Image (tube, rainbow, N blue to C red):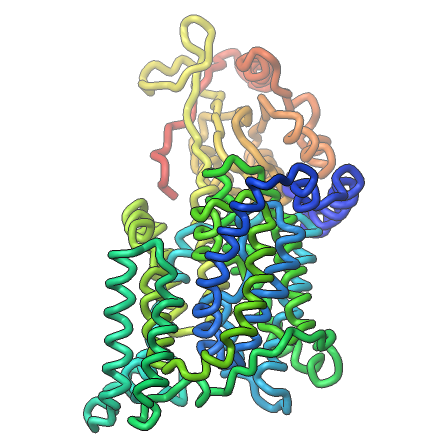
Length: 605
């Protein structure tokens, strides 16, 4: 029987408490016990590589979300460090990501009627995300992410990539940012600017040139920190050529980067921030859910290469801790970064110390070069984000998702369309909902087939109706899930058989039926009442211990009559033979026979 949410949560709390008693030490501390010089060297190298890539990405994500650059850098420094202390993955890197940034931008655009600044709103949102993720990890809800299709994640990522490109094209070509951030408004403004020839050619040249340089470097020297190199070249060119005199916007025009040390600011959920919770809870839940999916997907993918054992629920707790500590230091919320986590693994990271080294080095680099970032043209950042968005789209796996099954193709396009035209938090719920509907539809199609006893006394699928020797007893073999989604189909198909007046006794063979719930039990009792009203009988054979427990706890066993229910035995045919003997007792005439149910084609209603 399926558990309720309350039962799942209660068991999750008990299991988590027991787990802490038996394994109270986070994996990071166990790694330190066997830490040596070779691991230190490998982790330092990987940490430095990740830190160099994090700086340009953080600048871009901050501009994407519309918040100060320091808020993104601090997320990678503080949140990344604390997440590494609790994660079970040796390669996970926590920090600002493109999906989180785009969700923040979408959420901020819809918030009105408050005196809080954009950053203060982001901090409230980040703290909610942290609490949700920690709660989900404690309640062991990380295991539920396996029921969400990867097709949803692929479609959502592709939609987010389109949003990133649409939001940065204005910066790339020097036409400015649109007042509205939806796709239609962005396209209309771009068309209007081009028609009116309001394009800054110097800015467009810088943006398109940067994009070409990025693509060229990634193809020729993929091992180089191309993002960092492009930022250095762009900033240096802007300073030497005084590009701001030609109307090329710089980072400082969106807010100067001071390069200050991260400072503790306290929890933002107080006063005006608490009033904001009802408006942003949906966005926080969507971001937390997406963070869960990203973290578990990334850690499991990397774990297959390194042979690690990953605990999804501890990963959620680690991410929640990272988000809560980041917000207390005035930083934006973050998530697991696939790009930086994969880079960490490829760079030879051996333990979680690589992520800690990355945070420390990022702090040093941030203080050293922060002021220099003020001179980087926004067109350079836009070019980098657009190229990054292209890589965000997983073309090979999207091809698999769109061609594997019709259901996957439908889930992909519905989720992708919702991501383009709905709020991003709404879009992720639409995708998850459609994915679950597709799953339930497949799971709710039990197979009912016609069985008979052959000449040797064994049960077998009947191939020829003309060979039936008995006509008053029908054996119906039921196989598949019999939860609430399948109850109506199961009941309807058996009732269709009952239209044959010659059949007096029905034997439901439930040996391979699974997961009975309250809805199925009620359908079974309604079927019995319908047959009784026409002077017919219902017997049940081959039930497992779980099915027997559900029937007994619900009171259905007493209503069916214990003499009419036959548990499964070691020999798979014994319970059905005993049901046959009972059926013969119930027949009013000596002309007793068995007619078996037709084999309905799989997938029919």
